Amino acid sequence: MTRQGRSAAFDAEPDTAFGVALDDGVSRLLQMRKMRRLQRACQNTEPRMDLPNLAGSEG
Image 1 (cartoon, rainbow, N blue to C red):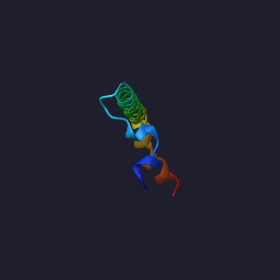
Image 2 (cartoon, helix red, strand yellow):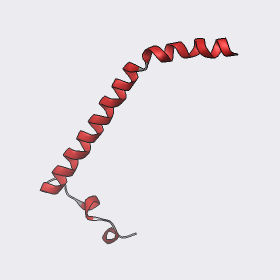
Image 3 (cartoon, one colour):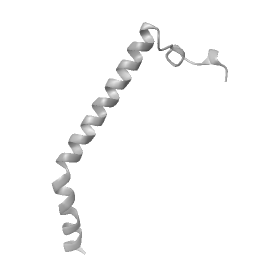
């Protein structure tokens, strides 16, 4: 596959305005996902500790 077959987004240079906006948007999205994962992990701490007890009582 040649470079011509790719979309413009993959060829964006970081020093162009579009490339900077793309990098900024992607890093912001990844940061949001990381924060959500951390929040979910904190909220799920108690139920996860209860799971082995529930599984043990059923079996």
